Amino acid sequence: KQEVTQIPAALSVPEGENLVLNCSFTDSAIYNLQWFRQDPGKGLTSLLLIQSSQREQTSGRLNASLDKSSGRSTLYIAASQPGDSATYLCAVERLSGGATNKLIFGTGTLLAVQP
Amino acid sequence: DGGITQSPKYLFRKEGQNVTLSCEQNLNHDAMYWYRQDPGQGLRLIYYSQIVNDFQKGDIAEGYSVSREKKESFPLTVTSAQKNPTAFYLCASTNRYYNEQFFGPGTRLTVL
Image 1: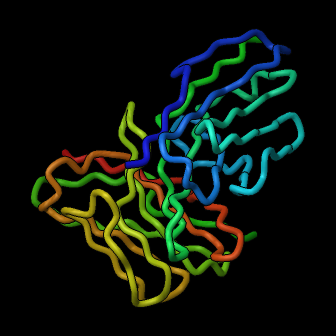
Image 2 (image 1 turned 180 degrees about the vertical axis):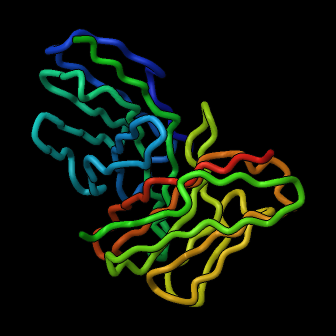
């Protein structure tokens, strides 16, 4: 059974600091991995999608890497800003014969960037 | 603007009532999903649909029902059989070719 773990559960950093969020999964047979951001009381916003054949994806100050063999992904945020404060979730898509797109989610990392 | 809408934003239910949560998308996505989010837990899949008039149970389908009569719409009914329905409900959809899931703003359901 696929399990997704995110460590740490909460993180507080001063503004301007570079930081790394971690995501690990138990079964390396994944189709892709997706990172999301969730603000309090809101839906999820997709940040980056990494296909299983890719090693990393970048969008602005965000960089996500994927190492399937070790069951790990990291989300790197450069020059953090108070507006980056949110919960960050990672999710892996199960590899199956059909196009089910069923995601397994971690419990998230709550990030607070202090001004 | 393309996107996913959910209504209502807040919903209150009395014990023994059925309630229906709305989810509409204009992204022309084939697949749609319902998730439940509880504090301290990850999102859990309730139901999903890959095509009109077809849907499958997710990991926690008991006490819920869905329909998919139109490509754009995937309503979720929380029945009285769901013993602990208070939660945040999220609807999502995906393009079958790119696989990136997009989410709606959510509905917070509270049982009084």
